[in-house]
Image 1 (cartoon, rainbow, N blue to C red):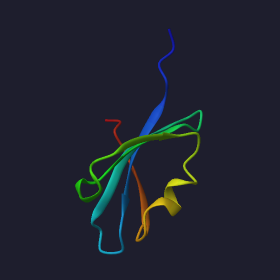
Image 2 (cartoon, helix red, strand yellow; image 1 turned 135 degrees about the horizontal axis):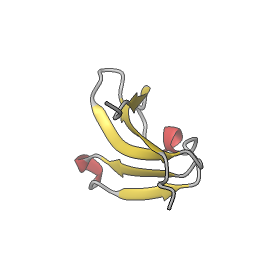
Image 3 (cartoon, rainbow, N blue to C red; image 1 turned 120 degrees about the vertical axis):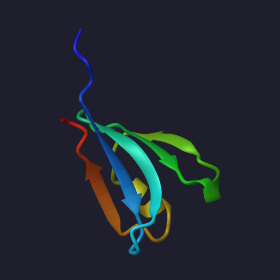
Image 4 (cartoon, one colour; image 1 turned 90 degrees about the horizontal axis):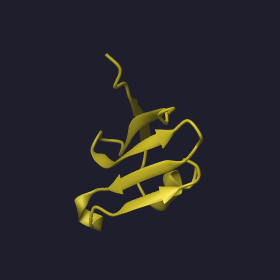
Length: 68
């Protein structure tokens, strides 16, 4: 069975404050968890593009290297 390949990411404001964390799958699907001041809402999208317009103040999309 093939495991889905994925990459963790976080969205930050211009000061480096984390606004959301998530997982980007190689197929393009995205799962995101927004920060507590908006209720730590979990959502899924078919691409990364809509996330960048959903919350004001997003300045950085940081991919997190999880491979050792």
